[in-house]
Length: 394
Ligand SMILES: [Ca+2]
Image 1: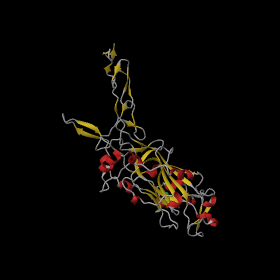
Image 2: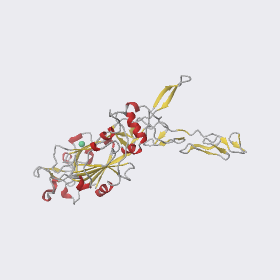
Image 3: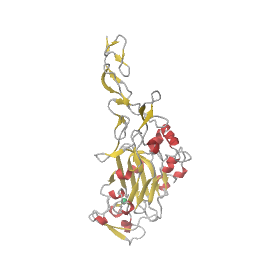
Image 4: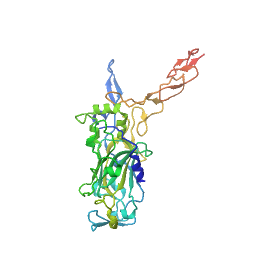
C-alpha cells in the first residue's frame, strides 16, 4: 500500500495554478458598462473566482488500512522520549477516543486522530490518509499538518487531479533523503522560477532525534507562488500572465484529492526499540489547506450541495461542479483566458437558424446541425443549387 507512494515519486515533476491577493479584482462575474454609442448600460462578463476557504473543513477522508485508528480494542501507548509516560486510547470512551475526524474539526490542536501503535503492526508501518473534495480545488497558501505525536521519519505528500485515478508527488520528507529516496536534501529556497514545481525531498521536518517542540510539517506553496508573482510578491497581473502562458504552472496547484502517506513513525536515533513498540505511532491534531474552489473563472461563489460536496455556482452560461462545460444550447472555444488580458471567455448561445438547422444545439466548435441543402455554422446559407425560402429549397 505505502509502496504505491514510494514508486510514484519517479514519475512526476509537478505542475500548478495561482492566487495570492487576487480576490478584489476577481469577485464580480458581471459588470455594467456604458455603451459607447447610445450610452445604454450593458452587462459584460468578467473572469471571476470564489473566495479562499479552509478546504480541510470541506473534505471527505479515508484511511488505508481502514482499521488503523487506535482504541478498538483499547490500547496503551507511551511517549517516544519516555517509555514510562503512558496513556490509553479507547474508542468507546469519548475522552480517550481519537477518530480521524478530529484532524479536520474546528477545535484545532486540542483534539487529534491517533493510530494504533507499532506493536499491532508488522514492518513497514504505513498509513495513507486520503482527502477528497469531489471537485477541483486550488491551493492558495501552504498546507500545514500539525502532529500530536513526534513528526514521522518518512512521509510523502501527493495529489490527484482525477479523483484518485493517478497520483503526483508534491514533496518527500525524510530524516535522510539520500538513504530513503536516493535524492539530495533540498529546500524550497533552492528553487527558481523555472524549477518551482520540482519535486524535492526535505529533511527540515524530520529528525534523527525528534523534538516534541517541533510538530508542524509544511508544504510550501506561498514561496513557490512568490517566484511567479514578481518582486513585490503580490502582483496578480504578473502571476496571471505566468498562468496564461504556462499550463504546467496552472495545473500545479489544482487537485481533487490529497494523500498523506505516513511511511515510518518517529524513531529516537537509528534503531527501533523492539521491546517498547507501543511508543511508535502517528497522531495528527490539525490539517490546514487554504485554497478555493476551482471554477475556471466562471463563478464567484462555491457552495456545499445537498450531496455534501462543494460545487461552483456557475455563471457565463457554464455548468458542472467546476464550470467546465457549457450549458445545453451554448458553446465555447474552451480556452483559459484570464482577465485583464482576456475576457471571461464564457459560453455563448448556439443561435442555430430556426429554419436551416435540425435543432437548436451545436457542437463544441459552435457548428449547428444543418438540414439538407443548408450550410454555414448557423445553417443560414444555402449550398449551390438551393435558394433560401424558410430554409433552403431546390
Ligand atoms: Ca483537531
